[in-house]
Image (cartoon, rainbow, N blue to C red):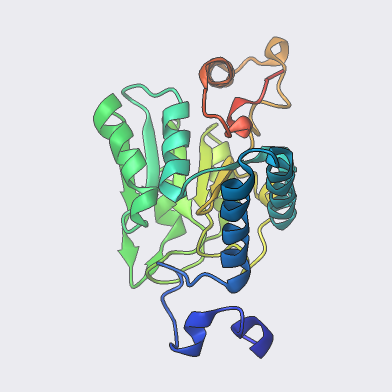
Length: 255
């Protein structure tokens, strides 16, 4: 960290802070932005509402640029748990489905899937950890024709282990499963090209990015695979029934 960046973080003046993956110190620029917004509401009510929307849209564009996606696919959430809960609640589940994940995932990337397991009788398959690492062959071997979603962190919070997202995505898409990725540990420190990896959704602490790769290029008339028809039906139901105010990417119209 150079001196110019370090000066943005008051905590760095008092601490050698190494726990940013848990609770990151807020930079002065973010603190100033929050204060400015609160002061505006206090002094003007909603008079500057369109300015707030413009700020949100600029933030969407910046995040989209970091992920190589369109700004319209970005939705702001309260936190990572909220993002994964939206994904879990927005999918159609039934007994016999399974979710593949990692045994030592960050809790935000576990509890949503555990809830699905307990509520719908879905099997939750967890690849074990080996000396701080994930054996991708072992994880991919858990994926089969009944796998509906694979949930993984791009960078593991406890070990720093970085997974090969494109390899996992290929294995998931081979059985028409979705790939949901927690990118909070890596966003900003490394690049993410979500379209190249064909990631269904990526969740950071404030943003949910969703892309329906299986749906947007498939015409029902040309779709012979029953699972793909089921995915179409699920997505249409979600589009009609979703009511999260800001999760517009979760309500994309389908072909």
